[in-house]
Length: 556
Ligand code: ATP
Ligand code: MG
Image (cartoon, rainbow, N blue to C red; front, side, top):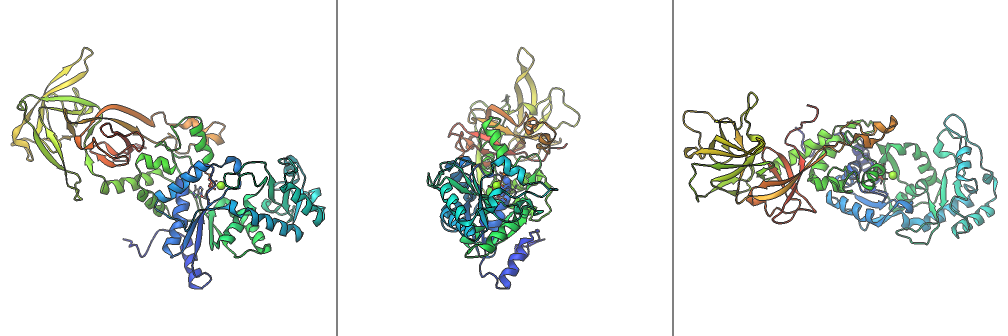
């Protein structure tokens, strides 16, 4: 068994941080989580959040939240607000105010001028198509842009005119003078500034030139005194450039970049572009649709922040990558809810049962524990002549080994009596619409004499139960790797699971659920874990979302 003091979960960054603290290289570590505000956070981001905030917490350091907002056309205040709420919901708090790369635009501009003056940057007037062509490819070196030979004075003047708005979008760019033959394509005179006449959510219309990601990220890290700049592996090839800027500019600190493998989950899409497409094309009800892999989606589905943090701990942090089974995430929420969610009964397909030998007008208030192990008190279920059971718990012609009700058989009602099915009432089409049963008055809290009753089924009182809507959510994609279709000429949308949402109306929940609070979570006995919907659940008219089934039934 592991204890909290000796984490066994692999995280290759922990020893690095520890040794930087031990050696005195840093007296305190500072990390950051740097989302682009161009969509909602997804489960992959949770891994990066838990990693950055988690390391800072564990080693007594700080973690910043910095919006990487250099691409105003795709960004929006809505996303900024949502990202802040998500990080806090996950249980983390950033140091001080949230930060914006755009707050450093002035400084970045001055550093661009610094590079021009040092002969390390030039204005290029190749069109975007020409620039692509001049760049070469993995096997062929690139060619120098004609602008590369411009003198410093002319570069300064052109850059000033770019900034003043004299040129159209794409007409010119500012590039670093590095090496057009570098085997690493990122070093082939990368773009530092682009012209983009666009309104920015933070800086308004102040700028019409915007710095590139590469020219922004490392310097922003340096400005904030970030010690360990942790990003995903696709930035590994950008590290030489990250270091090239830090080495040449008069930056106040020298952060170091480390890369880890991004989270890939099977049955799941974690690309903001694709998630946005699902929303825009209305394949789901919104970013917070409970089938989405967004944090707002998981939240609305009923996932707890703790279950997501646990999951991130379980998968560890390494550079190897691979695909994680979504079953691990489901395991994590089951484990959490098994311990924390009170039990309740809800009948999804109600079938009325009249207990013919139960005295008219009599009511017994039965007390059932709210949790089998934890002390959560009791709930009261009134028991009388008319109840509902689930239509699936009665079979005229049951398969072998069936343990529920069949003609003439007995079953125990959870926390109540044993009843026997005497007669089924059918409609004109032959469908069972009501059962007539009798109960054994000697079986409350004890087994009947001389016979064994195997099955236990759930039930609710007919009169006092509350009508509710239940939304049975399942995985959004039926294929383990939905994005494979994109590589094969199809679309990930082809893999949407048509049964990913089944809405049941007219379900009946036990009376204590009438006032379920939005986001209150329950185990509906024999049915799964559910939570009252954040938006649509009303007092007296609850709506429940299925978070996860009781057991993993996929792949069976
Ligand atoms: P997407 O590919 O979904 O658009 P992104 O990487 O462009 O994601 P950012 O907003 O730039 O999204 O991400 C912020 C941080 O989260 C980055 O440090 C990024 O590396 C990290 N991150 C994004 N996706 C994942 C993932 N699947 N696993 C781990 N970290 C991730
Ligand atoms: Mg990104």
